[in-house]
Length: 112
Length: 111
Image (cartoon, rainbow over all chains, first blue to last red; front, side, top):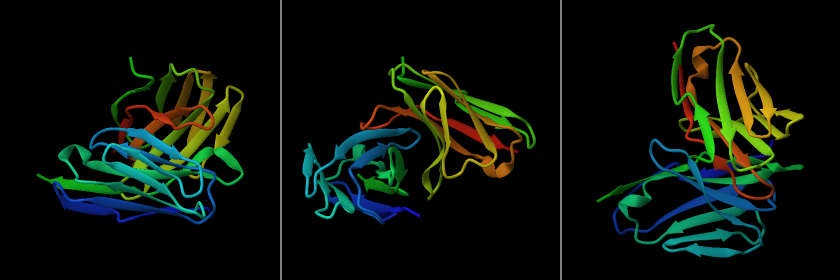
């Protein structure tokens, strides 16, 4: 069945280092969404990418959607302790674009 | 007030008991979802509803049922709770094709 996979599962970085999480889909996606879940919190929508090769930035966060629309990445420049949490990517289910398939998430720990 | 409200926030119940988790939203969206989160497994879809008369099973619906009482209300029931249903449960709502708005979650423990 359709799968959305993320790597790495965990990442520990020193504050100020960069961080990247990668998302790969088994199928071509019409769009990809990214969410952040702080420890003890709930997932919060960050962004949606729709176009092939699209790049969007939110302050220190850079989101990319692959040319084939099967992969995506989230890059954080100069991490801060406020970046701690789990980052999920999600793509629409084939044939049912209102239903999202989530990746397993990448949990980021930042050492001050 | 939160856009998506889930009750209760925490619940401990015994094996075999029936339990209902409730969700209400003020976003005015037609689409609502119930997800389950387990460590290392991400978010898995239990049930979803695209309008009041529409109920659909997700990937892990066995042992669960839902009721869409109104556009704003979507409840999840465990008819006979078992320990492997111990998890964090999230309700979410969306308009199409936008992002989801999640509730704060219900942490359920079945003993």
